[in-house]
Length: 305
Image (cartoon, rainbow, N blue to C red; front, top):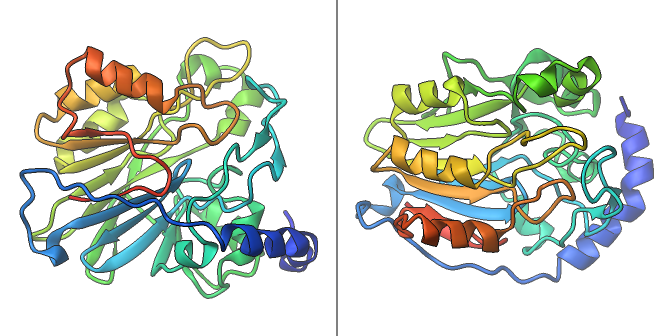
């Protein structure tokens, strides 16, 4: 594990470039509200997709930055052993300035793979930022970089500024991936997060998981009004299927919770995520899903629910 000093030394030039390049970007922001959510602003969920799985949720006036990957386009080599590994990640630049991305009350890490918590984020995030992780193992790694307020979410939930944050379970690939010890070690554990508060809509961020009983259990237990799915259909060479969700899971989610809004993210930003927005939008049309309920945001795009 890299130390804080090592990160500050090796990331210094990169982060200067980050601030210089991303700081000049302009936000691409549009509004959308589900027709059933004519609520006061304080009771709405504010959402902005930053890039990949990086998103901001403003819930009951508190802003959460989820899974920050903050490097400039092409900062890292592609993931070994995955499709298109000759491409460099991220595939695209940030759509908004770094300074805007970091305006947050807390950070939530569903897990600490490089496309969810990258060296740039580890360098740029203030050391006293409140950071939530899935377990003590991830928390210890985050603390090694000098962060002083790292908290572990549980399935019973933790309260933060009046909102209950609840850890849900997931699985980063099906059993045939985890049957190979080396692959299982790389994939590791992941979590989703439920945002819960009386008299407010419930949000569920599924995280880097395939569709399985854990997802169904979370959907049944909490009946979320808005569901965020990582739908990039990320793949590993030599294996059938994906280690996260894809277009068929969007349709499954749509039918599983007939009143919930479904938002697909984690697309077109890293080399091994193979489903494009164009393909997903075409699928939504083919399946005749209500496009007011199923949303495929562009990077930088915002909605209110």
